[in-house]
Image 1 (cartoon, rainbow, N blue to C red):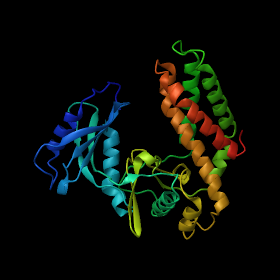
Image 2 (image 1 turned 90 degrees about the vertical axis):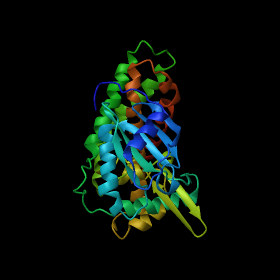
Image 3 (image 1 turned 45 degrees about the horizontal axis):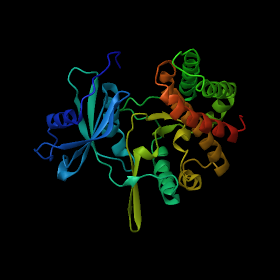
Length: 322
């Protein structure tokens, strides 16, 4: 990644980048693009209507070049060998002299995953169990990063530094300080409990984890007698403990599915693992927001931080770490 701030092109740039690809079987006519995610935080996402093979919609994602290269390698070298459904990758394209690039994916279609629906939770449990138990070792043909407790601790330390910077930020009003102080207290308590978290994670198998298995990245296709799930947005994927993927699924169904491969894991163990996953997930969310603590982006403190702090506190409470 570079320190140079990339520009913010509109949807027409996605059309031009796709045209430069000349994907086999794709229409030769120009695509009509709609914005799914405006350029913010270094990425943007567009839908190109009927631009793909057989007239399918294409999702164009513009983000950092190294992220595009990593995701493209996963789609090419790892995901085709897994017993789970995902989306097809049509390829990637550079973005001029920018430190950015384009990734072009099949539109997943279907409906968003809803953790409130029991049938969706069971489907996700079976999908994740199949993925988690498919690879006995990290893949050799893809530079899959290792993400273990040391990496998550680095995120916690990042949170601590961000909060420290935020407490001295003159752009913050008095109404923001209680939230920062509450989050700081959570972070200090988590660091005190870190040896226990390491012990719990040490008991888990290491596997391929999606690490961003949330409704916005998962679609469900429901048909009479059968339903399928497809996940995408693999830029956070890594090799590590599966806890972070288990926060919003049916753990009973997951336990049944992984038992042949991991017979030592009972339902009680899985519930503890999922609680650890919630701690790791919401810590990661706070770390993502922490860049804003020392800036004038105070809306993040009022919109997102209270939710993350509350959920982190609840997850730590379930582990007895209040």
